Image (cartoon, rainbow, N blue to C red; front, top):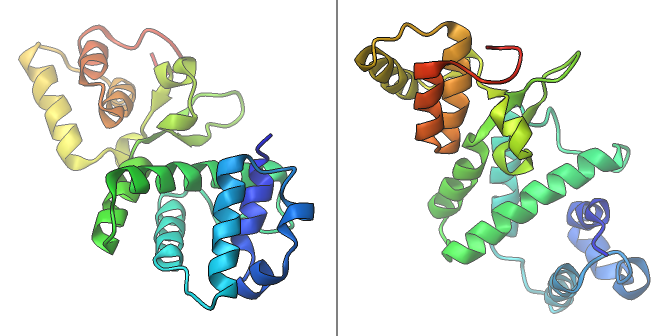
Length: 206
C-alpha cells in the first residue's frame, strides 16, 4: 500500500541521506512498486555519482507555484502532520506524471504543466472555513459549490463571463460571478454559463 506521507519524507531527504538510507527496510513496505522503483533508481544514480537531472529545478518550480497560489504557506516538513505531507506528495506526483506523459524536458515546458495544474483551483464552502483546493482534489459535490473570490477572478475570464451575461440579458451578483468563475477555471464553460443564466443551484452563495 502506498503511503504518501512516506513518499514525501523520501522526497525531502538530502542526496547524502538518500545514498545512505536502507530502502528495503525503511520504504519497501510503505511504497507501491512504481514509487519504490523510482526511489531505487534515484539512489543508484546518486551512488554512481550521477546528478538527478531536472529534479531540483522541477521541485523548486512546484514549490514556488504552490506558495504563490497560497495552496501552502510553506512546504511540509518532518514536524508537519501526515495530512499536509500526503497532500503535497499527491500534488507532486500528479505534476510529475503529467510531465512524463507530455515528455516535457525544458524548464518552460515543465512550468507550463505546473501552471496548468495549479490554476485549476477554487475555494470550497464549508462550515467555519472555506479551504482552497485544486480541482483534482475535489469531489463532484465540492466542485458544484466551488467559487473564486471576485477580486481573484482573472480579468480576461471576468470579461468573458460579463460578455455572456450581457448577451443573455442577465445582471449577475458578485456571488454568482464567483461561482461561475470557478467552473470557468475548471474548463466547464457550459456549467459557468448555466450559473450566469439561471443562478447557482447549490451552496450558500446562491
